[in-house]
Length: 115
Length: 109
Image 1 (cartoon, each protein chain N blue to C red):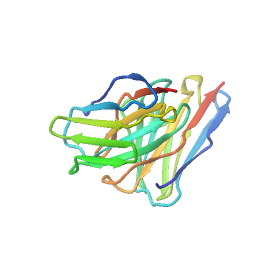
Image 2 (cartoon, one colour; image 1 turned 90 degrees about the vertical axis):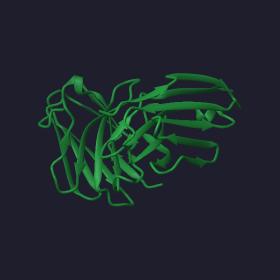
Image 3 (cartoon, helix red, strand yellow; image 1 turned 45 degrees about the vertical axis):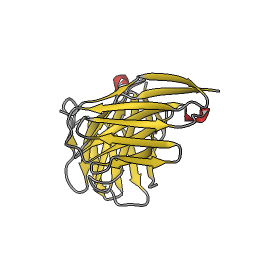
């Protein structure tokens, strides 16, 4: 299947700093990319949907100024956690798909720890 | 809003058994349904994708069925192996993905 690469896989940062997570579709052009957050032993919670070249659509309760999403090209989307706090510590996963009727592929996730 | 439920939440079976995981959803207006596997601390691996016009898909020991009218899908795993131990997630898709709560499977050697 297609490959979605997410980087970094783990990151530890100090409270108040910003962290950028990259999501790349390596062998296809992703019209849409999704960003999820997952708490321990829970399912994935959709944070936002991003379409190439347009602003991301955020789910209710997700602060767009805190979680900045950029989808500058058909193969790259980034999530920046700004002014991170310990409560932002979580597992973040991205996914990408060509269009609504095609299979979605997921990155390997990023474990963010804010100390 | 679409709600997706998976039953059971956890399942433990001896190696070699066949098993069925269940997924139900409230809104039948979906594009497709996808089954995923997630190992601890890892991302998701796509297992099977069933288009809304299809009734089932098979891959190796896995068979997934879809009944849109009743809002149900099942994932059948034949001859389970310890390597099948993981969390299995179903997701119904339209413009967004709606994930189920997951079934944690343990296959005991």
